[in-house]
Length: 115
Length: 111
Image (cartoon, rainbow over all chains, first blue to last red; front, side, top):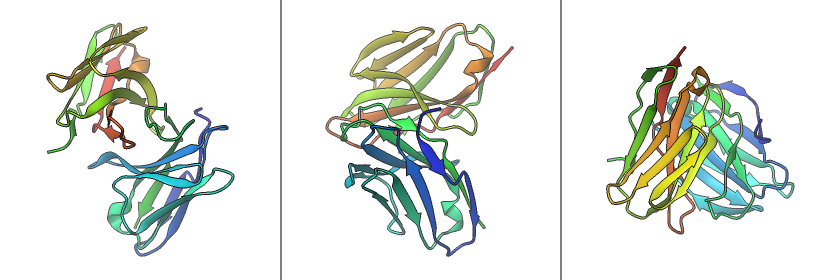
């Protein structure tokens, strides 16, 4: 158990809908990272937050957004969902800012299915 | 062309075999190299981390980086059925905040 928690574990929804994925980092970790893992694209970095501020952005679509709250938990919002958004979404956390050579600890993931 | 190339396998070996997993990359700015292991239905976990070229050993695992060839390897000695998982290589460039992952190689170790 990495100490990173993600809810929900599974999410099934329809095209055009909006969902929110939640992540709680390990105790003491200030950085949260979001990744998308699909069969055809592999593990793709989406976005990183450090202590409430956006730190780095990867291949995140404009339909997706994230934030990190004062208690350091983070939410990833996915809107206008398309079939291609079906994937595993992982959250990871690390101790410090964004020297991204910090060890990242991954949560168990949220499996999103868009029908 | 992807920045990081990794053969997805699957790779099937008998218990006790030496396993060699590899990645190639195109971005010469990559300085930090990692190997993650991902069991089915779990998140990736960091196995090995190396900086720049050279070798690093940790128990049955050895990571090698050859920057001149843009090639990294992970060797697993005395492989066990519990090593059956997907192994992902990952890289970060200097001053970068973005980790680039390979596609992952599925490994099966048969008892």
